[in-house]
Image 1 (spheres, rainbow, N blue to C red):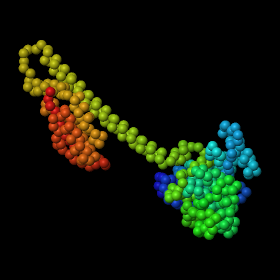
Image 2 (cartoon, rainbow, N blue to C red):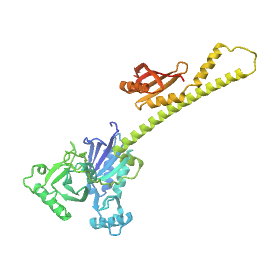
Image 3 (cartoon, one colour):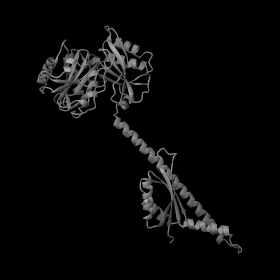
Image 4 (cartoon, rainbow, N blue to C red):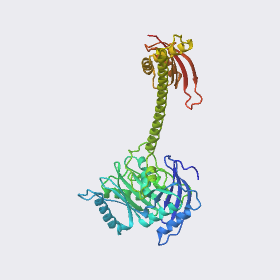
Length: 459
């Protein structure tokens, strides 16, 4: 299987088919359909899905890949709960959600795994059968996959497409002869409705249904319906009446995908006429793990982390170089002081009158000159003239000639010339000469390395 950097696997699951796709995490390219497997469902639907997943993944090099499951909406439940009066704890909302679930679907919520998207106005809840979730995670573990997401089909489609919804538009998902409509009010998802598509449903039927749902919700009828999935051709034609709702599609279907396969395409990222991004639905049944948390981090967080790490490494290396230069300079100073101390002891010790050898006298004089160097003035003058664009490499003062030999690196020749001029403007230096410059070909950034000689006035 190709490189997994920036990609993950997505498995669409319905009651009679499963599909495997390779999806880019950050690119807008359509997913690549890798395989499909259809099966005849029995009474034990969860076990059927588990066996179908084993057949789908059998013989494929998928170990270690992150995997996200997308469930057909008939396998999941999605509903909204109005917070009861006086509710102050999550347990109160969970109890209200369980009661609402039982009233809507006629069964207790104990055998279902619930996930909530907490919202102050009206939280959305999702539920999936616990045996189905066990079958999904078990199949992934048997093939060495890490589950990073288990979402209903509508939730995944909404999260992919909500940033490209236009102002005044509603969102719709078409799959397996079912239209799931997301009613939008301002910047939030107000309600979700699942509508069976009758044979020959046309623009008139669609407009009437949307107008009825808007009336029931107390909202204005949508000016446009933006759909994901296989859109009926009759809906995308120009409206024949002013009351008909205009329909646009996000993306075409995947080539070769069956109608029963749950295939999610990359949604739009906004464009002309797009409204501000709506709130994403955070309904996910995947078990908590470190890899899932890292997988769900947005690209901006990863970019910031990489940039911060690079800055820290660069600062650490620069600090280490400065510390090493400081230690080397301190060691040179101590060695010179020790040599001078030994020379003074030899001079003051009683001894027969004897002349000091010229070589020793020259050595002592050189040490004295080195110790009498105006270090503070030199450092202050160089620091005042050195801009951030120039990196100092070495400072070699010649006490006898009153000359400071300096080597540095700059990004451009303009930075180098400006640095020479800045040194000339320092009162401490009487003259500055550029002696050598060359491009460092061994460095990928190809900086300009140069050497200077700055003369100071003896005092």
